[in-house]
Length: 538
Image (cartoon, rainbow, N blue to C red; front, side):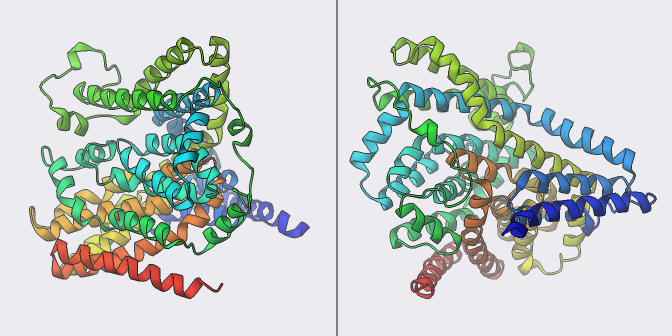
């Protein structure tokens, strides 16, 4: 037992010692930019995280390895690269998202302190009587919040945790439902920060149109929804999730890892709180964030959004969203919603101003693990960028252009691999969308399928990756151990990925959306029936 406890630390130490030896003896090695080695650091980080169950040191080893490869194993240059390009750029580039996470954490703390979460939980306990009902209610709520994946993860988690806890749904299952209704929903919502990101990589004026055309062929997102509904109604689980759900039935919602958020959820709050004391702040948050994203889009994405010289009133709603910057719009939308929420709760005399201010550090502390992981995951992505992983993928796909009918499936796999290794869907878009547009004829059905495969693969890889910001946010929203979330979600995500791959193989030859969707739907439900039959006695 002692050796098993020491094994993760020994693995991490072995990697660090190996790096030290490489630094000492290979200082003149040329950086392998644009080669398969460019994907090696994130793969190592992911492997270590899954083996050791410890994410911080695993991510750091990946960052360090990326720095060594990018600088030719020069120790001084490695330190500078890891510090500057890695961590400093990671913090500065995602500072807006960090601020939004903190504001959201404070709002969640306020909702609990004021009693809004408890009131909603009591209401839901009376109306949502079953485990199936709680899971479907969480799924429906996640689908309704389609504006942004970060916003989705944390809001759905904050609102539905009391409901799923009473229904004895494990935190791992809650994290999966949140994750499966975050990026997949945003990827088929024309009015979302993800649609804006996709549009920004397409030719001017064609972004939203291409995005909308790709929706019917986005097999991974659509089949994920079918998978969740089917497995909920069929009342079974498989893989590591089965153990977590069995333990939840016996009162253990966590199975392993720290029992996050227990003390916060035991807080009664004001007895005067009603259900609308939860609904009103959430509606305020959604409405103001939508307006903020729209306003920033009209200001051409400039950071100083109130500068009248940047404001373009001629942009319509869709064009403004295509031009928006979520790292600017969400933080100031969250800040305004936070101020109004404090005023509302104090005015309703649910909490005192002093209690409201006490929620500020409490909300910040709740978001510290997510911010740390997000910082390190972004730093790892930056180091991978130094190794020109996009150039490697570009050259790899260029050699497959002769296999036109197989290209959607190839693009799907390539997008999965890039998003899984780098932990970013948006970076995957930037790498693959220009390639897809250059390979396929403009306006062709096969081109639309190729675009859909690119977007679906990016979501799939993002969904599976332990270093993905959306995966991290889902763990934070469910207040679930991150490695538990990753290990239980992976079999489910890979099942849908396999079904989607078969669908894209068919789509490359048939090129009929109704046949492809019908086949994928039947295959998804049939696969679940087979898995249920094979696992029911285990």
